[in-house]
Every structure is written in C-alpha cells, then in structure tokens.
Image (cartoon, rainbow, N blue to C red; front, side, top):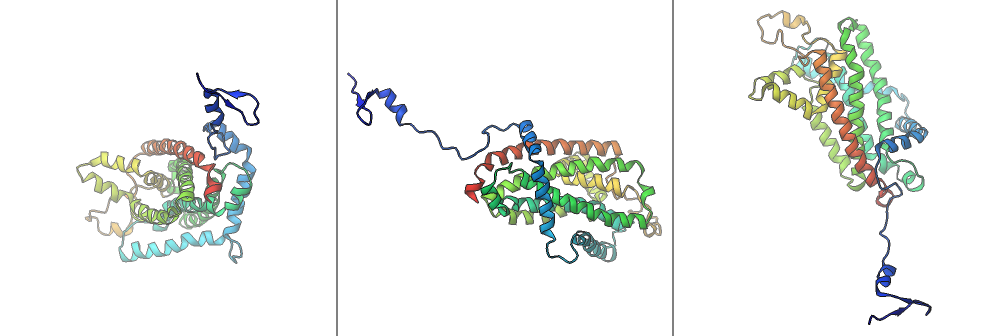
Length: 334
C-alpha cells in the first residue's frame, strides 16, 4: 500500500504521482521575445518600430561627426585619400594602364566602403548600446540595421565625389543601358550587408574578439575582390586554368562581393574594352585589347546579381533567425 504525505500545513494528502508534479519547476526562460521566429510577423514588428530605426540611424550619423569641424565632409575625403594612394601605386608605379582610373576605382570602392563600414559598425552596435538594450524594449535587429543605414548615408555623400569626376570627364555618354544594373547592384549590396551585419552584431556580444577578427577578414576580403585591379585580369587567370569558366562562376558565387562590385563597375564605369592612348601606342602589346571589366553581357551580369540577391536573402533568414534567438540574452551578456 502506497504511503501518503501530508501537504504543508497538514491539510490534505498528496499521492506519489501528484507529489512529483508538485515538486517540478518550470524551465527558466531568458528571452522576452516570442520563442518562435516568424519572418513576416517579425518584419511587421520592425515596421511598427520604424521611428526608432530612423532615430538610431540619425544618431549614428551625428555621433560620427560630433565635434568635427568638417563634419560629413570627412566622408567625401575618405575616397579621395584612397584615390590618391591607389592612383599613385597603380598608375605611376605599376602602370596598370586602366583608362579613367579614378572612375574605375571609385565605382567599386564606394560599394566596398558601404559594405565594410556597415559590418564594422554593426559588430559594435549592440555592445555600444548596452544601456539602451538593458533599459528599453525594442526589436534588437534595429541596432545593426541602423548601422547599415548610417553607412548608406555615407555612401550617398561619397557618391558626390564620383559624380564630380564623371562630370569633369563627361563620362556619362559611355554608360547607356549599363546604368540599369545600378539599382540591381544596390539591392544586392544592401541585402548582403544586412545579412552579415546581423551575424557579426550578435556574434560580437558573445565573443568580443569578433570585431578585431573582422578587421583582418575585411582586409583579406578586399584584396580577394577586384576593386583596385581589373576583374578582366581575374577572368583571364581563371580561363587559363583547368577550372575554366566553371571556376570563374564558382568564384563569383562564393564571393558575392565580387559579383556586386562587377555590377557597380559595369553600371558606372561601363566600358568592358575601354580605349587607352597608352595602350594604343603599342598595338602589338598583348594587353591592347585586354578587357577591364567582366566580359559578359548585361543580361548575364544581371543573372549573376540575381543569384547574389537569392544568396543574400537566404543568408538573411539564417542569420536573422540566429540573431533573434540570441537577442533575449543580450541584456545578461552585456
């Protein structure tokens, strides 16, 4: 016969099975968010807090230029300094022979600056706003998104520098239908930046070495992407290996930034086989008709950009889900 046990206070008795359930405790829940991630509902939730996103983006821009005499003009000086250095190296020292080198360089460099700047800011976005995270509720994704928004503002300012060079050299006549690739390239760039920003933003909360490793990774990535040297050189090297065109396509898919940069270069630099007086002086030189940009049609490049957009959207879903699951623990880890 099973024994019974009195409840505290001596009233009533508890059966053994009931006693087990009575002693069990609920598992600890560390997050205040809905435990299940629904992308559409979450997107609507972010839209509800859009004013906070705008205000945090504005704050990121203001903080960057606080107590600065030149203010936002520093954003335009940044690409000018890069331009001076790389023009000296690749035009004076190495003599790359790329016509209109400032336009070629800036067409890819501005896109890279947005990408690297967004990741660098996003890696610190949650940590730098620790007090806000601990005291106020809002969707935490807003923090890395605000970083992307702030760097997009810098991108627009830096675009003025490129526009000035294009006006001076009356370069717009070279572009034509290539300009249609600009919005597609911009969408791909923003989506890919958002995806990795969500990843590094959450990762840096748990592992503070992330922001330091990120700087090394971006430096390596920069030189693995044809920005200061021609994409045509990379294409030529792949086509002369046993991997051929398949290897080139694999490279463009595995390195979405290479495809995105190629899209910006085609949209803003435009000419795959630009005429160069320096090269024309030596018609027998093997580089006389060497292509500077990726030697594909506009439709083919649009298709590659479409693949990059699909990859970016999948990456957003993966890293957004991961960010969402970790967001509830941010206050405890900061």
